[in-house]
Image 1 (cartoon, rainbow, N blue to C red):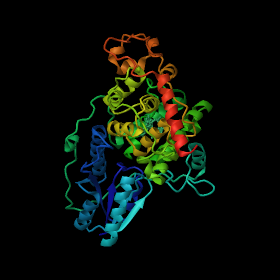
Image 2: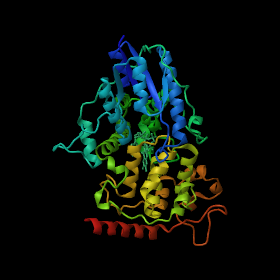
Image 3: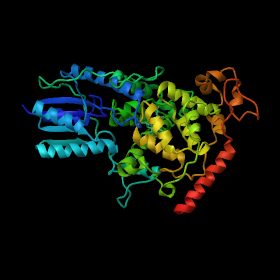
Image 4: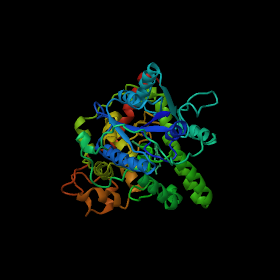
Length: 469
Ligand SMILES: Cc1cc2nc3c(=O)[nH]c(=O)nc-3n(C[C@H](O)[C@H](O)[C@H](O)COP(=O)(O)OP(=O)(O)OC[C@H]3O[C@@H](n4cnc5c(N)ncnc54)[C@H](O)[C@@H]3O)c2cc1C
């Protein structure tokens, strides 16, 4: 009986899973395995909220696999060692998996390929995480795009891969041992209690259906209002592969055809966000060094002279800027932050507090349920002015005018800052008069935005004069 392994990674679903489908089609028996990391040195990149979501998603995956005749095999440790043990135990002749765009995941893939080459086992990587991978969307000269708009135009023109089926039957060889399904206590972690979304493919599919039915038509109009639940909230589902990006994209395009002209524009705005996700993935794929240094080489090695104590106030929502503090507290309490306020808080850390974007990048990765290395790095570098952005560095968002534009009714701010619940929302639109406080137990703004902006402009001018314009 031919046996193969499907190694689950960030594809925790049984519907339209390229590698799983290929494994099932190629053999009589499949070992479906997930390997828990030991978490050594991983603290810069993950945290309790995401691990909690992962545990729920693994439990749901096991349930789905049981529904088609199998069950999830759970192992823990070094992925290559564990896979090679599993080869020896099961007699598997191939290992299938879906490729990872992250340098960490790719390094493991390279080690696995070498171990399998020595052992005479076939390794079969598949494309699944993106509709178009790193070397598919290229300029006329065959080069990688460094700017979004031309990338997205080229992306849209390419033919799209077909949506695959849901696995109907799975035969798992007998006698393969498994660890119990984990919960967060496995890593001795405590997740945020409020507002964390349910993990697993079933919950993700319900979120997708609800957004397609009632959210996508107004997405374009409402997506920037942090107090309105108008975005899809599918980022963690795409992060863990609870949904197939092919299926989501196809469903959006179909929905767009059914909508009126305004709805269609809105649906296409949503598709553009899915393309941003792939844009940042291909940046990370092609320029993995962005995890350590500025994407725009003009700013490489730039000095961020901010005070480390300011970082603590930013992290815990104590800056005295209501929109920033509301967002930072939303993140702490739920493991999520709205896209508009991700931009505001990231610009505030870098351009008002003059702290290194890598600090914020790491804090977000530790808190976010949807923490995705590529999008997070891209979002941070974009906000810091060092990334893949066509806008010049001197376009600096003002937190007070951002509040006026996107959160003037005070609903978002009051939701997350109880100290300000009795304050008239018009007071959130500009700094309080000198010596005045918005509330007795709420801090005064820790910086003057206009003065901080001037310092930022000088920082960038110095960097440009040192490294060329
Ligand atoms: C500083 C900063 C950090 C970020 N970190 C992450 C992160 O770790 N993980 C993450 O998934 N997104 C990140 N984003 C992008 C964006 O904020 C989130 O994807 C979005 O808020 C998730 O909510 P949603 O699913 O309701 O989004 P929707 O508005 O419904 O968007 C649909 C999907 O498109 C993708 N998407 C949307 N906006 C972006 C974007 N700007 N860049 C890349 N993909 C996008 C996501 O997969 C999202 O689920 C970051 C943005 C910034 C400015």
